[in-house]
Length: 354
Image (cartoon, rainbow, N blue to C red; front, side, top):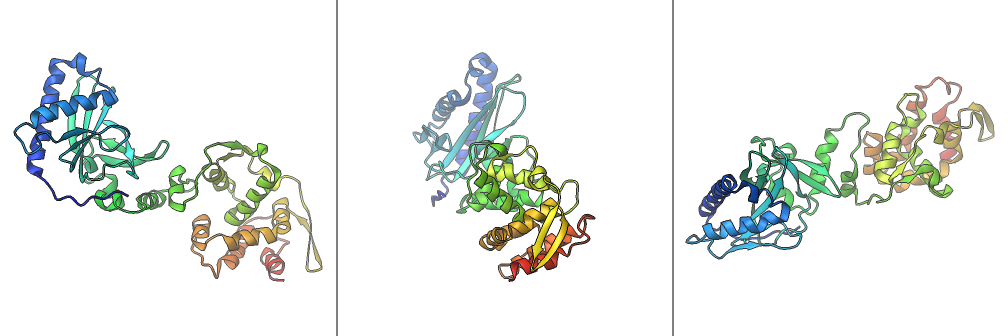
């Protein structure tokens, strides 16, 4: 994360320069609306730079207005300290997608950034506000980006929501983490974070979305093992017990599985031998469980307790996680009517603790 240590130069003078720039741009928009309407995207940036350059004559910012090329952030820099990010829209509103939360392309010396927004729909208008005051949410395109709202009310920014100032967030080594934690706290039942969650755990999502039936057999087997370790509700009787698994497959593994239920339930009932005793009439999902216990245990042991706490929606620890998983599976099994003849907890313990 790029952080500069400049002192604040002429803040009052710069505020006046921005105010006069907006006034001049709005005046020109009324006089030459047809010309201004053609200045979309990057075409507007040099136009704004030229207006600011003329207005800066005789001020502390004379000969300091610089247009930054390439993909750098922000678009215009004044006295190497202030930045102006230019956005345009041809729609009759004041919202658009902004810049990356990570700010990896931020100009090193810039400390204070302002958003200059051009609404090129009729009535054409220019506005400018401090950058951090117009960022309402975080949305995802190809990376987490801020959502800009030039009408945003005071106290409604994303920084108000996460209770962390913009300058504090942007200087963090991992600015995504507080945002992820905020959005996780707002999830409803059956909802998961998409792509953005990957920034928090360091695991990259596959750019290619795959269909389950096209996966190699070994890949499908590994995913079934993980599913039984991470989602104890699979062993319950709720109608939506496969919902979180389906979301996980697409958001974490980039895999679409049209028939998640068939992965565990197809095939009828069978027999399971445990310590010399034979258990009959065992549902297919529990046959899958008992037949793969060594790999499931290995998956639980190798997965950090913090990750398992997120999957299970309940706290666990490195010392307790295996026993906690047994309890969770047993609690789910007890909700169903098709395994009342089985002591799932005892069977799991006998299979695991040999």
